Length: 127
Image 1 (cartoon, rainbow, N blue to C red):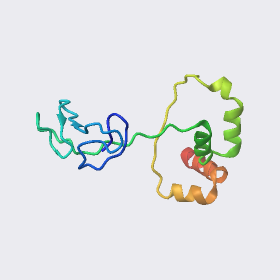
Image 2: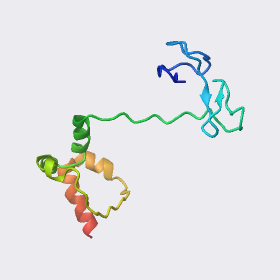
Image 3: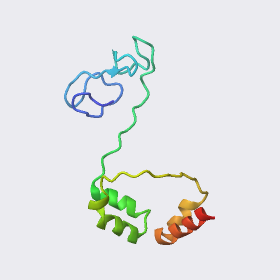
Image 4: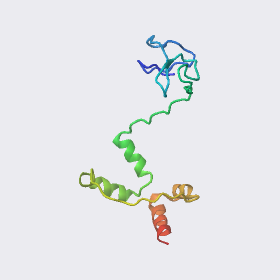
C-alpha cells in the first residue's frame, strides 16, 4: 500500500508508513471514508476497497515514443513523419479508423519486418 504522503510502498498490514511515519488508511472509492489498511470493505458504506488500483503508465520521453513507433512503421515512413513534424503537429483531420484483429499478423510482421509486412497488409485491405 502506497503512503499518501511520500508514495513509499508499504506492506498491506502496515498502519504507519515505514519511510515517513504517516498513518496509512484506505480511502473508500465510493464514499471517501478513511478505513484501516486491513479492511477489505468500507466501514461506512460497505463498498469493496481492497481492489488494487491500476498502475498509471509512465510518461514516455520523445526518444522512447520514437523507438516504439519505429517498431511498427517502415523506416521511410518514420523519417517522413519526423521531417514534416513541424507542419503536421497539432493539425486536426477527420479520419476513419478500422480496428481489426488478423490472426497471426503480429508473429508474421515480427518475422518479416515493417517494410515487408505493411504492403501485404494494405493489399489485404484492398481485396
